[in-house]
Length: 413
Image (tube, rainbow, N blue to C red; front, side, top):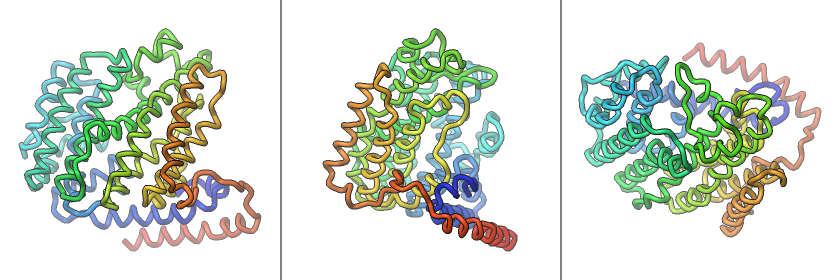
C-alpha cells in the first residue's frame, strides 16, 4: 500500500491500490507446481514485481514464453551489469549466452541477492525454455544472440555520441521490443510489427530508465556505469559525475531536460505501435509500461531530485495506471495528460525549451487527432485538489480495518 500521507492526499488511490494488492496475491497463488516453472515465476516476482503483475494480462502459452524471455535477458543483463567480472571473462559469456540457454547444466555465479539465485539456478530457466514451442525458442535465441553481441561491443566502447546511445539502447532494449513482437506473432494473436516501431517501444522504456537511474549508475561500486551520451552531457559539465554535485545544479537540470527531450522522440512511434495491436491482453501488457514511462519522464523533467535520490511515480498512481489502462483511448489520454504535466514544467530559459515544447505539442496533436480523448476518464490531472474533511475522516477510520483484514488474510494463507 502507499504511504498514509499520499493516500490522504489522493484518497481515490485506495481502490486501485487494494486491487493491485489482491492481484499480487493472486499472482503468488498461481505459481505453477512444477519445480522449474515454479522457480521461474517466483524469480519473476522477485526480480520485477511490476512486470510479474503486468505479465498476468497474457494467456498461458504466451505468458510462459514471455516469462522465460524476460528471465533469459535478465540473466544476460546480470552478467553485463556485474562490474566485478573481468572483461576477458564477461565478453565470451555474453557472446555465447544464446547457446547456454539450451544447456540444462549451465550456470554462472554472479550478481547479488535474487539475481545471484537466478544465475546459480539457471538450469530451471533452461529446463522451462526447452519445453516451449520451437517458434518461441527460435525467437528467444535470436534476440539473446544479438543482444549478447551488442552488450559485448559496449563493454569495450563508451557511449560517446547520440548515435552510440541509440545503438546501445537498441541492443539492450530495442531488441526486447523486436523479440516481443516476434513472440506475439508466433502466438498467432498479432501481425508482425515493423522492426522500427518495435525498436522505439524498447528505446522509450530504456531511455526513461537510464534518465531515472543516473545516481544509482554513477555511484555503482567498484566502477561507475555511464550511459548518458558524452555528446549531450559535455555541453554542461566536464565529467558525467559532476552532475551530482550541488554546485552544478543548474547545469545538471539543463542536461536532464536535454535527455528527457531526446527520449520524447520515441513517444509517437510507441503510440502508433500500440494503436495497431488487436489482442486486448497483449495491448494491456504493452501499454502499461509505456504509460509508466511517459509518467516517469514527466516527474523527472526539470527535477533536481534525479541527482539526489530516487524519482518515481507514487504507488497509488502506479496502481491506477495498471487498473485503468485498458484501451487505446486510455493510452492517448495518459500520454496527453502527462505531456501537459511536463509542458507546464518547461522553463522558457532552458536551452532546449523550444525543442521540448515542439515534441510535446507533436505528442498532444497525435492524441487529439485520435478523436478518443473524450472517451476516457483523466486519472492523472486532478481539477479539484481539496478533499472534504468527511472523506479524510472516513479514510482514517477505514485504513486500520483494511490493514487488519489483510494481516489476518496473510496468516490464513
